[in-house]
Image (cartoon, rainbow, N blue to C red; front, side):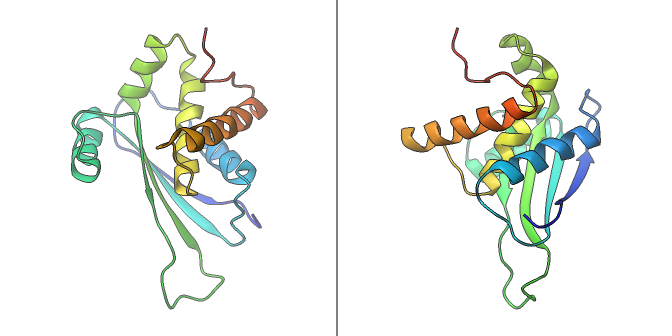
Amino acid sequence: MSSAPTVDVQIACDDEVPAEPEIRKWVSAALKQSGRAVNRPCEIAVRIVDAEEIQTLNELYRKKGGATNVLSFPGGEITGLPDDATLMLGDIVVCASVVASEAAEQDKALVDHWAHMLVHGTLHLLGFDHNIDAEAVEMEALETLILATGGVTDPYQRS
């Protein structure tokens, strides 16, 4: 990637959330270490929401009930723009209350779980998925590697 991505952070809830530089750090780390080069300026929106908003999005776009931790909405090429135009990579929506609940339930540091959700969401924007076992193994290994570079232990570690 030739330059740092633009990461637009929108906080739409009253819950405890990481500082914006921390959010940008994890999104940038995932982009840089993904192995899927983005060779032009790119932009990602990260929106942090409450359970009601993510539940609405989850039902509308995934046809699944209930709140979830993170959703990714990949952007894409827009025909007719110059080759050097900023690539709108997509949007990541994270539910602060679900992330906090999961971290507590899984006995994980809240900051580490936030890092995981941001890396996970960014990798989805780059085309990674976990719908089949082989894809899940690849994506989880990459997430673990990226997180480890920032001092976060393996989020999939089974005790």
